[in-house]
Length: 440
Image (cartoon, rainbow, N blue to C red; front, side, top):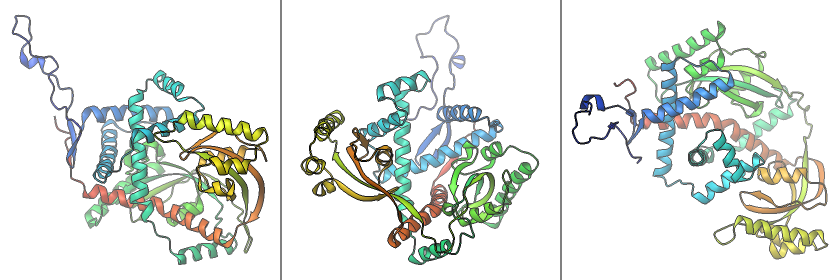
């Protein structure tokens, strides 16, 4: 449990002197409790720091700030939800150690095309304390893994749902399953087993937001003011989503909307929603019975894992040497059998025909950029360091098994947001929360 700094004396008590101010003048409040969440507290210092961060973000986005008191309450609610999740993670021994954290930060730096040391200097130039950045990344990884474990791993997609989904696609694209929507939303959450009074109170909130939107109100500002969703302080932006990965409630409403239009109030198990259609692209789904053509890549690789004995530099250096031998004429398959630490080693590192999404993002990106029959430079992924060679590329009909696997993935994605919102609501409703924001 984090250490609590509550009332603090601004000046230390010293020996009495004629010049010393009276004790009443020497006491200054530098922190206080603004909320109690189960057995932990949120302090004013922590809340103020998060508010400053959000204010800077909203200004950078050009989003008008909500009224000060409203923003305070919204940010505090986000902190409460984070606290409940992090408490559950600790109670269930979900942790991210320093080795895992270092690898995550290295991947972030690689995405910025910078070495870690230079990435750190760039952060510090922008006034970001690196130790604080590290802990923020650790928190995000914990929350992501918690969501995967508590929500996504429990989503069930039945064979009947898959059959219905595939039948819809084969009936001629009447619903434009290849459409993508750029949308924003406002969610007013309903408590679990909400009373009629609570339902009406929340309905009045969402109707008030909708009325202000239709009177010309700024959507991002009203999302930050009214929405209970985790993206409220990002203006409710959900970004681009394929139609078939949206909740059916959203997809049906968006299909009838024009660009820039705001929906009527929608009701889901999580609460009340208002959507805004920002952009639309795609369409032209294939006709009835048309077999979707997909890209496939036939590739092989050599993997060197890192651990307590083999450092990142050692693994990378080993692969550089192996690559030099292969480029000089050594047989890739034979070298893979002797050196690769992957299950494919016995097959000369051959991974067979791969579909998009079969490998992790770093591997797939390097593979897609690689010319045929050329060996890549060492590529870092969460599994270690790889050498990759692309043998062939082709377009092929998606097999029946692959179609069903893809349908299952799409349906899981479609359910994920709804399931997550429901889980957050239940976790929040079970927590003991005592507000002290108004205390003086």
